[in-house]
Image (cartoon, rainbow, N blue to C red; front, side, top):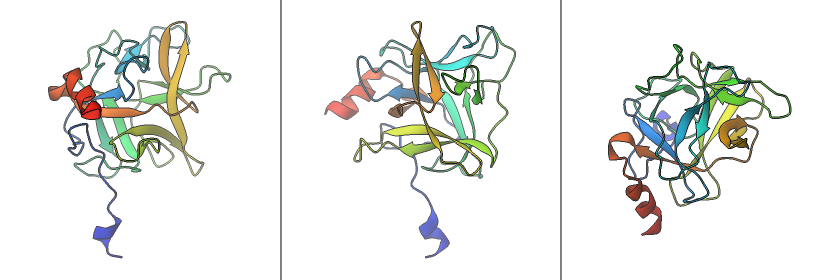
Length: 195
């Protein structure tokens, strides 16, 4: 097989377009209703003000905040099963004078690692990936995973406590779709899967 045959499939948004590294996207739950809305910044799990954790809006009417995704290898397109350099909330002002790049913190062993911010970007040792969600083989539905060294990558899902939904490693995978921020009407997301 040649090098061209080794190229991984691109991650697609709900319009069927490839995810571009220069564009912001809302990360939305594939489930309408109880599935919640898009990803947002929430108070830190340990109660401190900063850094903020990555959470999910409880309202499916809230698109959340757009993120930009950069692969570890230089590519203009985000690809399935490719190590990511960084996932960052784009142009998001916060009370914390820190980066909004995703990272992982171990606040509580009973909960497991929580996805937080103030990261600097992934490495070959610690990184996020986007994989296809196997529950939706014909739709552009994905999940995030977190990988450490050569260990098996773990699913990233939602951990809910005291009315706050946070992304956490080792949970049931959170099935998501990507909506280009400039095309952010919720109706476009829902009509994609109901028509």
